[in-house]
Amino acid sequence: MSSLTPEAGALDPGLTKLLHDLVSFDTTSRNSNLELITYVEEYLSGFGIASQRVHDETGGKANLYATIGPQGLPGVMLSGHTDVVPVDGQPWSTDPFSVVMKDGRFFGRGTADMKGFIACVLAQVPQMLEMPLQTPIHIALSYDEEIGCIGVHRLLDLLKTLPVCPAMGVVGEPTSMKIINAHKGKQGWRVNVRGRAAHSAYPVEGVNAVEIAAELICHIRRIYSTVPETGPIDNAYRVPHSTLHVGPIHGGRALNIVPDECEFSFEVRHLPQETAQGYFQQVVSYAEEVLVPLMRAVDPQTGISFEALAGYPGLRTADDAPVVRFIQTLLDDAQTPEKISFGSEAGLFGEQVGVPCVVCGPGSILQAHRPDEYVDVGQLAHCWDFLGRLISHLQTERLPV
Image (cartoon, rainbow, N blue to C red):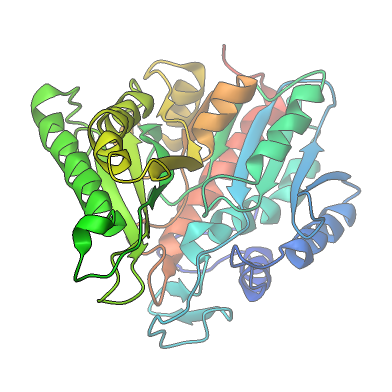
């Protein structure tokens, strides 16, 4: 196995090339990821490894699933998303889609989130083949994670058809190689308020959609203000309770017209032992029982509608679950796993196909989504060593149960 230590800063050449190549594909979520998927397919094919593509409905994007080692056994899944967030309007000091090495850091969009992890996994393929694996390793790559964990659902549909699913999984989001066994879930909604237009000199003739939306937004804020008192509370999270947040809002055409339409979006990020539905129902009840009657007293054609946006469940893998204990052993980390407020696809794997997961990968979430995103050489080294231990274990022993 190639030497890789943080002190030396000497990365495996294959890992360095893979990182450069993967970042060079502009897989911003609005774009196709097929060039990257083809690249990975051809890379794996060069080692005699077959892959399965799972396209989206347009054929312009795809998930990828490949198994290395014996077929028909559960194994360990190593999972990552191929899409990245936009660089538009960000003051990058380098080309975001061309990796630059400086001061022990690799700069480029996706280096931390999460092409660094994918590059480490792919660079270890030769080691996976060096000795026959007793237990397989499954590589799962998804699309459109950054816009709500959308693409992985089609991959989950594939997994549901397989005779055997992975026994456990590692989702390589940037956690500074710390084990994460719990994170919050998320659900968003778009709200459309249909009012009645009128001349602003005669506002009583209209129904001001912007004002009604403002009333509903204030109610969302009131709901949120009670959460720290009513709980539940989990101090292992940086924000120890569920949160409600209002985002974009659009409404009105001109100052002298009573707005007949207003649209805004809001989200709930909830602790994994909760769901978003309870909070959502409080919003809907206020809209239907308080605001809509006032609107329809003026015009029965007015109203408020809700459209569900993308969401994902929380992750809540037990501290003593086999996947947690196994990854702790490989990382030589006996500390209690941590919890995070940002989400991942890990909860979906557990909920949809029964694959218990942890989140663990190189780089820091604090560097993700920002200009001059980077991953430290030492973080890649740590990930490389972890994967090496995983491979060595699966070449000689079975998974713990």
